[in-house]
Image (tube, rainbow, N blue to C red; front, side):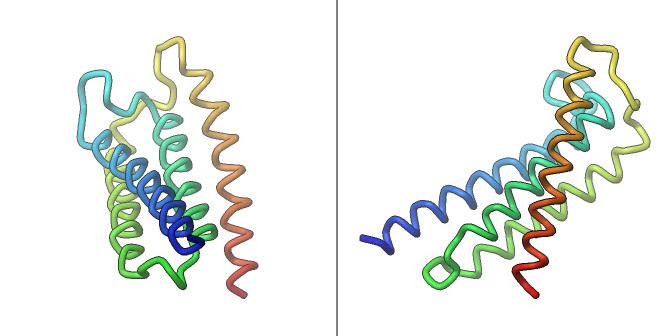
Length: 127
């Protein structure tokens, strides 16, 4: 029973991390439409969310019962999303002319702060 719960929770966390990284990767390819990166703050926000979820999945999943081989595609997808964001960065405006631009800035700063704390916890855990 305990192993089943660990697999379910681990699988759910890894799936959410994959979905967030894949969503960011797809948004970096789109240059028009509503499913694109609006501005640089939006890119920072979405990358911070994907990074935070990936670190939370790494810290929360019991890797003694969850296959480690699934971790490599998750990290590769996050790296591809980061590369796509970096390549798209020069084309993005700093601030979009939408009503949600202020929300993107506040959300990006909060997400990056939480991601920094999560990475710090990960580093301390691994030491």
